[in-house]
Image 1 (cartoon, rainbow, N blue to C red):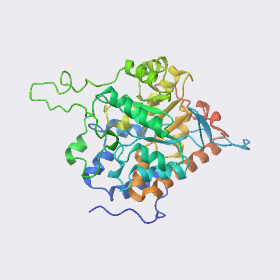
Image 2: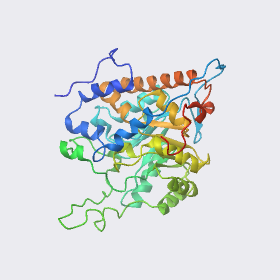
Image 3: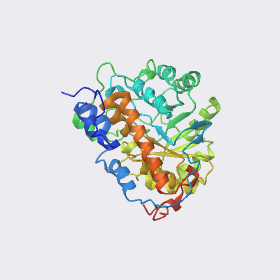
Image 4: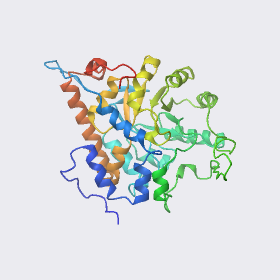
Length: 373
């Protein structure tokens, strides 16, 4: 039987990774498989974390740190530090309050939050509770009118950007979920999608294609759909799920306001590169024309530092804060953000970086070029 959420944070939780064991004790096997699992053999899931371990930071001493800080402007929003909460679906699987607990934590910590299309709390309810900038993660729907309806609702509720997930036209092979028999429990649903036509669900018989010609890809978005969305909204359009430099170039040409280097937390195509591996290639292609963000594997403030050194303007965290949410609700998410920000600022100080602008490849010991991670 899963344990109840922690009433207070024990001193044994001293780092973000410490929350994982406490989260596991508070979730049943099926929910844990969904929230913690990746695609197929989970090689990319592990690679996301391992890539950070291969990069070293160059310490610097006796620098003038007067007036230092971590603030930045991102898509017209002033942020206190470059750590955002990534979109994660169905957060009521982790805690009874779900995304509402998370948005309260984000507000307390002055962190921007990206709300999932598949949130288990309505996007309007989260906007009313928020005292921090919100972006809305948008999945294209089978009916483009439903897609536009979601965008309009986000605009009306005061969201500051649309984050279009582009790397999951079909679901990855989720073997861990299959083995656990995962299904959404009663009372948890994608409430923002009520009344909308669902995506095609196909079951292929032996000898038939499960993907091509099955209808599974009929509603998959294209570059033309991104161009259409840009004409229909005044919000910045961010593309999440870019790993190929060629796609980064197309995103710039399509008028994306920013891109997020992401492999969906290792949940779509297994054996895809780690996001930190892909990041310098993307940065070399984009050449500062639009902001680059990244997610995947971040558990330490030093990870945030390394991502920025390799070309990211900011990072998004996912599983780390979900573990905090599952273990201790709002307080757990607050604690995760506080630890990451503190560790990041310590890394900056010890690397002689007074501001975010000082964090570049020279802040790394090996100065890795694309392909060397």
